[in-house]
Image 1: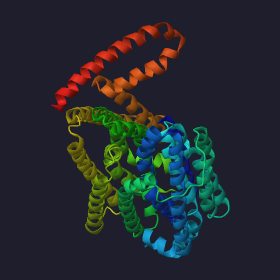
Image 2: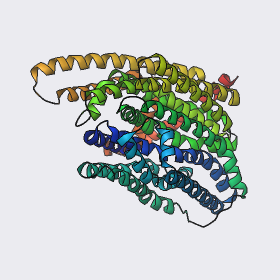
Image 3: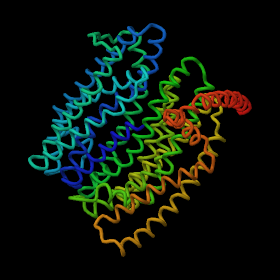
Image 4: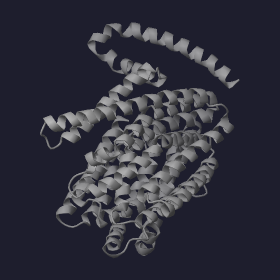
Length: 542
């Protein structure tokens, strides 16, 4: 999580740099669409590879040894190369058709910039597809730090390319994007090799394991494909609004995705190999326990983030992007989009957790059905909002949140039917405690912000006083929230706090004398707790 946070901070700097030099303009609209095309197309296979690769790789490694698992990894790499080549050729030969599918509202200079960008940036597809495979390989071998931090080099290179483009030619951003995706491989390859991966030319579509992967990921790919269609239609609707609307939506989505990347990706990345092993061993009881903990940890961080972000949506957009070419109109558009996106933020985390549970259980059809339902819901609401309200670009964000909530509800119901009770009472009680703590925190922080701004604006003459006040208010809110969830005795907070003490405080010299005693007490308490928890689980299951 800490490493993903570092990567996401550099991602923020990237977006701030882009907004400073180019604002929300025809160039940024074209740049965002050109990024979306390879990302969306490669996600079609990338998500499926990661989700389908880990359970199969784990079984091969456990039953047939590392050499066979390594052979399987090579076969998946070759499949990724073939698929990437198909995408590259498609874009190079039919750029206008591809652009029309993603942004039919583009014309004039906006269209010319977009076609130029996508012809160059499509070559990033190769590096993105390989990165997906190696990410699955490292996760399956319990290495999480390298995939978590690869965002740092890509963001640094993109920032440099944006600066160069602002001084010379915007096309430098397109070349910079390709170089940036290649830089990820420079970081991840040494780690992959250290984990004893060795490249072999080995292509066989008739191999039983490859067939199993293709069968497994087909519903996932269809699910991603449905999502891609959904994103394409969303981009098309966004392109119909005034110039800069699509950019405003993307800036807000990048801010919203910060929490997605930091919390949701980190939890699901660590959880998925664990529950895959449990599913392979038939240990459904422990699988449920990990799911319950993952749900509660997601809620613990995402609910206050959503509440605080909604309260300060305009201030946050202004703080992060409000400088240079990013004017008040762009701030207003992006803040409205962010507000509605944050409604669905906690449910994105829960949805991802339950999706991974189905993948671990080798059920990829149910998530596909739920995805189709979610996308249908989003498109229905998006079109209604588009034709019957004046929310404009913010309406797409609202439709996205509604669809996410609907998808989560159905995934939960189907998973409960598949593996039995899921400690619903525990989840609901934890969610209520967290929601109350978040609302109290939000009320207090908003009051504090207004009071501090009123006092400081008349006493202190400082150009960045409003930004300083918002930062102080948010930090105060985080402290207040932590105290409240401790008072409400949210178990996951106590677990995290105890883990912190064991992992870090006991290594400080003053604590060393207490280490043995504390560890002994901890092991005794842990044994008693596990025995008691097993009794409670038996009662709940009955």
